[in-house]
Length: 326
Ligand code: SF4
Ligand code: SF4
Image 1 (tube, protein in one colour):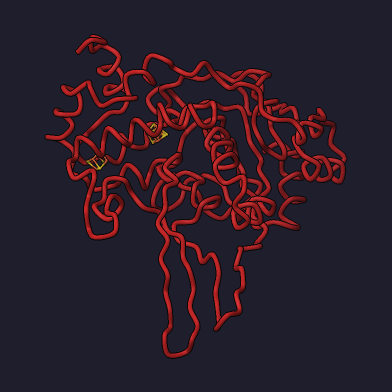
Image 2 (cartoon, helix red, strand yellow):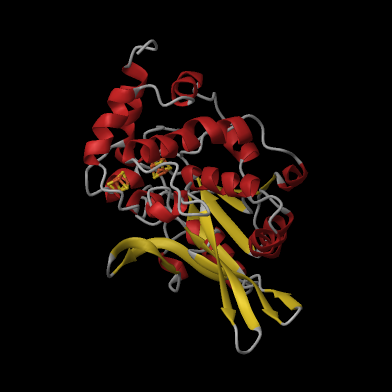
């Protein structure tokens, strides 16, 4: 362990509870970081991403008692250590999607991000993205550790925010200062794949969806594991006798019946082929249109958890292979 990185983590830990991907009893997973000296950046990806720290599986948005309401944003200070470029990309998407969400914004302000430039292997990363200088400009982080090729030594420290800069200053470490970027909008991230967008705008590539219709079990595992699946439902939980209650926001899945039901019980998307098309359409057509980035970071977690073995990379290939006039 390089002394400067340990020093940095110790300084952050004075204020934040630290979590990082690491080897634990159940395998490689994100857990509380207790042994700071043992932390190493890794190119491996835990099955469950950092999603729950930004968009919890279930959160209470507000509580009420009679006409009195109280917002309940979690203000715990959390330090997330070891985010890779794919992680930073879905965090950017959350920041854009929840830009006007006060609960998200309060939680986000209390998260400290330490990222690094180790890229996951191709089997867990079908975007094959290599680290480039532009990544330091495009993504949101507090401190970025740039390691040399084939080495976990000699990291270059980059401050990406005011709080990152303050911590690095307090550690007396040399760093590159990009904290001024905070006021800037991210530059264009990637060429949006126009061809796939066009083909997903209308569910006309029937062969692909018919085949998936036979295979998909609508279990929703892919939506739970996918870091860019942020769709939710709202649950009101009133305590009628006491005049109190709360509103919760919980993850939902477009593979579930309730997700598609409207008042009166009608379901506009009863068939699996429509639901799975909707899933791809949202990631590769609608999100690019709304946020100028794809709604998929290429991590392949959806494939890792799918009991039917559906491989997103193969599906995209098939969509692109089909003749446009089909
Ligand atoms: S590869 Fe799958 S799990 Fe990963 S972001 Fe894309 S859709 Fe989500
Ligand atoms: S994990 Fe696989 S089987 Fe389950 S809903 Fe997703 S695509 Fe369908």
